[in-house]
Amino acid sequence: MLWVAEGFLKPGDQYRCLEDVAEGYLEDLVNRNMILVREKGPDGKLITVGIHDLLREICTTKSEEEGFLHHASNAGREVVANPKRRLSYHFPQFFQELRLSVLDSPGVTWTNFSNEISRFINLRYSAFALNNMSFPNGFPASISKLPNLQTIIAHGIYHGILQLPYEILRMPKLRHLITSQTCYISNLSDVGMVSESDLKTLDSVINFTFTEETIKILAKLEKLILVIAKNWSDNWDDYNLNILFRLRNLEELQVFSRFDNDFYVRYTPNLSLSWSFAFPIGLKKLTLRGVRLLWKNMTIIGSLPNLQVFEMVENGMNGFPESWTTVEGQFLQLKYFCSSLDNLMKWEAEKDHFPSLERLILGNS
Image 1 (cartoon, rainbow, N blue to C red):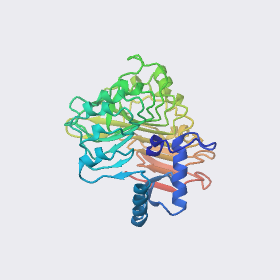
Image 2: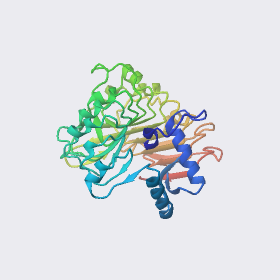
Image 3: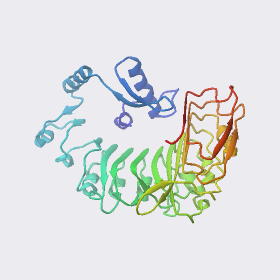
Image 4: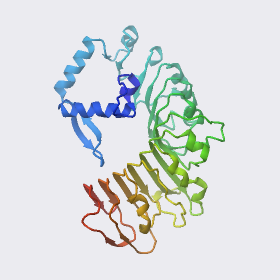
């Protein structure tokens, strides 16, 4: 996302988006032993990487020589006196005097964020810390005034439901919206939003209602994390999840069913759930937690032609014992399967089933 925001990348014929181009470059650096792999995801994609300290020193020196990146000391005025397009700086004062295109400060809590952020009109990437002290009135709507912003990442802990202003989804270039705190968004069509958004990542939203208009607006979504926080009387039909299959570009979907009270959060299925589980055909990663799914209906998921990662935990507490017989020709691309095996008393499978499986995790996760 940083490389995309900087404009380093150019579209390639074999990649459909700039983020895929970036992954290709990163894998090339790994193959050249310039980048060290620390952690991989269940689908084999890189999660965490590192760099040798000697190579980092060379990069730091070279970046200063070429004026590519300036590493500022603890003297704030040095930053203003020697303005650089790219800055490595660990002290937040004087930021308002700079013309930044990338502000990566996930560990910085901004006391005046709502007032200051609107000054960065050139900003394309912003990561910041989120808590009740820095944002007592919720997510700052002022960030939606930045016309060039492509990526928003908000880390931290915010107590209570964080209201996300719908104006953010009207931003003309926003591609990734990532928060560690689940956010509530008003129905997009109810607030007059009708044009298609460029949003590719929405992580994560709570109790979001899908409509035909919403599907059209979010047509470019590639990753969606959805939380359903409910009490025992909620009707899941109100969220209209049956039309999720219309998100043709969606590759990763995570759905969490959460029961909240004042003392704890528990992921538990609603046994009256009537979701028909019609999933987007292009899904590569699917996570269901606390979502009721009968084992006899697993053929719906097994028929997804591109599915590589499937996690299903806490899906049938207090239900009746079930059996599952897998069939040939399903789960053909599945590499990773994790399940807590709720209510499953008998599982029949042949040696030819799950031909691509590399990792199998059974039990609580």
